[in-house]
Length: 164
Image (cartoon, rainbow, N blue to C red):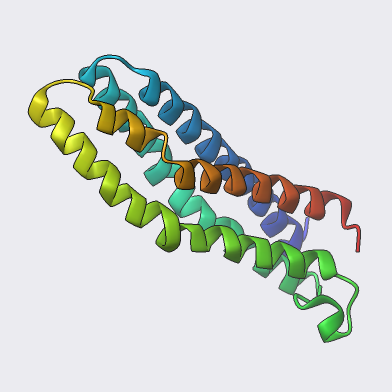
């Protein structure tokens, strides 16, 4: 077994962990959005936070790092035909990865602050409020989460199929 194959295996395993984190977080957040009791909301938000902090954040970085190192070790041109190679699928994957990452400062962080305010107001009242329910169903966040999952599926398909 070569170092390149070992790093490639780590890339795939970290990718599995990233998918697990995103799916686990999103399922848990959907359950929290439907919870009728504030205690259940907090418990489910705590679980979603574990997925986010233990899987999504670190694995996002690691999957990129192991992917780039794998490409380098295997002599695959990261810039595809721009670098004289035929790995344009890799360029598209990187662009999608960056686009997904940009959702954090452009959507998730600003909308997260709005959500935190709605949660604090619900805590002050001791009940799930209409504002908290609305914050859970923020259309911008829902679209961004959908884009994140679609982008992830496309990147996986590009890695496996290498269509261009």
